[in-house]
Length: 281
Ligand SMILES: O=c1ccn([C@@H]2O[C@H](COP(=O)(O)O)[C@@H](O)[C@H]2O)c(=O)[nH]1
Image (cartoon, rainbow, N blue to C red; front, side, top):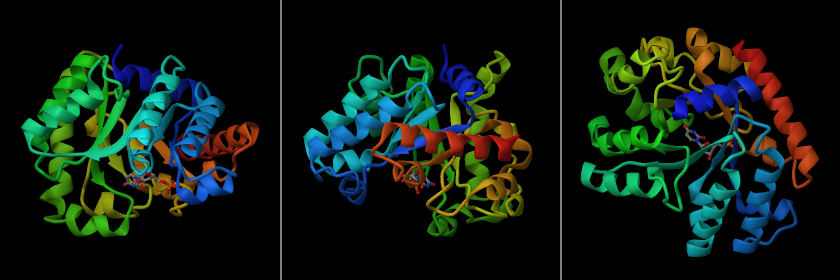
């Protein structure tokens, strides 16, 4: 089954929410855990236990695993293994991007069957030119996996690069390229193509100002920025308009601060799902 089909089914069953697994040092402390690989492991696996099978997607943030070195990466491998088979899709947020020959290495690490770090989908950066992501697209399609390509990120600094060139500029080029990559899947009748976009829920009027047609992409739209970065229901509605059916709202700290109690985590995720679903209906 393709990633687009699995994600669409997960969103139908659980609602349009992705919860980030972002074990910030401050969150480890707040949960009474040590800021080391053991604390990281307890934190991350508790989130998986509480939420896998309850939300459409989980999104481990690679940075917070990498900062613990090899032991942290081993925990990330465990998190990926623990989530498999729950129906919840795992999006590894590593924002990889490089020249094509090196991109093939990243594709092998994150998108190949049998790789210890293989996830359902990977976030990637198009700023070496979207075409440089070709090896990742091919690996994703081969393995029934997906990509989320940065388009309009949720941080205010992103505009300096992503808005360049205006309506026929950088962001429009990313949207056009993603639309092309999804054409075969769309023609085959898949509900969502393998190439999604990252579009922050915080970007305000940028989508209309840049004339971006996200509905035409026919891939999933990962929308970080909900919760701790200030976006909520009103912002989701404002940003996505006609493309809202494809939106997977993403939030990390707003849910994680409810822990460590698993029931409290599940309740926080359930509230966030209801809010996102109401906004995107
Ligand atoms: O444009 C982007 C792309 C990725 N992120 C990541 O999402 C989470 C957000 O965490 P919150 O606690 O909900 O703010 C984090 O891992 C970011 O690296 C993003 O925020 N914006």
